[in-house]
Amino acid sequence: MQEPMGRRSDHSRKELEQMLIVEGHKHMADVGFARFSAREVAKRIGYSIGTLYNVFGTYDQLIIAINTRTFTLWTDHLRLALEQGGADRIRALVEGYFSFARANRNIWMAIYDHHLPPDVTIPEQQHLQRGQLTEIVVQEIRAVLPEALEAQAPQLARSLVATVHGHCMFDVNGSFALMGETEPVALALARVRESLEAKGF
Amino acid sequence: MQEPMGRRSDHSRKELEQMLIVEGHKHMADVGFARFSAREVAKRIGYSIGTLYNVFGTYDQLIIAINTRTFTLWTDHLRLALEQGGADRIRALVEGYFSFARANRNIWMAIYDHHLPPDVTIPEQQHLQRGQLTEIVVQEIRAVLPEALEAQAPQLARSLVATVHGHCMFDVNGSFALMGETEPVALALARVRESLEAKGF
DNA sequence: ATTTTTAATTGATCGTCGATTAATTTCCCG
DNA sequence: CGGGAAATTAATCGACGATCAATTAAAAAT
Image 1: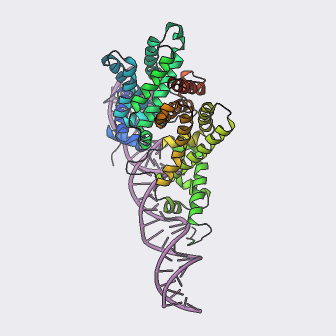
Image 2: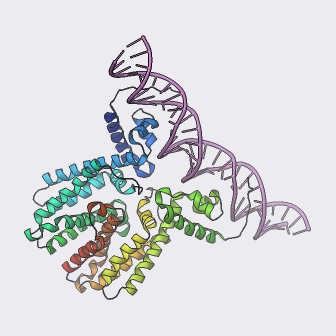
């Protein structure tokens, strides 16, 4: 049995928090939400479970932080997809949405596997961070709408994100495969285009 | 400590299985996927945890059976919505999709909270049972498509289910509320109509 | 009737989990 | 150098999924 090490100061509090988030993110990618373990995260960076709880307070707050990191990476992925995706920016967005989820199944699903207890809220700064993903979509939808309809862009963007999300979810969780569907991305893109064309695009 | 009761035969094996599924379904409705406990289900019907495992073999198979029951109730709900929903059957389907999910949050979410390990499959009979929900949608989409496109009905139905599902998911898990969206059903229905109109409806 | 076989049921057991906390160690500042 | 503040630990708790030897009672065989 090892004894307590007291104030070690190898790392500042913020550094320790980052280490836990990054390592927790890796662990989530490895084993998925159902098998995720806070103990294991602490062990992986050489700290005890008690220290982890001193940093995050609760299990939920650790998961929230890990999932916020996923949003950040996802947003970066979409920005890159838009940069490198050529002229058809709507296609780039839809394909980017799918490619991130497919390449990061466990951490992407963890966002939706985690349900906040009603008394828990996401810290403001993380909420803003997460909102950037939707903002990207709003921006691209607005750019493609007729001027007269630009005010509808935020609502339409939310709806089209939901549309693509539904297709992506059925792809990643195997529902589409069970139904014999092999082209989820094409379907999602077709639905988005139909809605945009209905708005005059 | 109580002693084993041996072959009791109060209930047949199939009856016992049904009791566990029905009680498990209630427990899932009460506490949701994250707090669900197989022990608690067994206790609720006056059996031990061991007996439950003798019936279902694994935790996953119990959850699968509970979720299949949800599909059955959901399918019944949609059939009723179509019967009583008047002439606009597409609207009836979309609203029925949402109203079931909203009225049965925990058990509806449990369907998507549960991820099968790759080596586990859904028993054939339960798979067929679950497929009836999609069949209902295919039927209604086919009825509304021009004759020349009827062959596309299954694929389009899958895609429109995904569209509605995405909206329903964002509604039930609070994403829409966080984004300030207050009319998820109307949005979903609008997207579905746009796609059907694009097909000539 | 008696014995044998089979089926059903139990709960103790194991390792692990999230969460909490008293005790301990180390750091830093005066 | 000394003492409060900060950081870290290990032990602890109740509950979880899973397993299985032991036990019982019904059914079948004799």
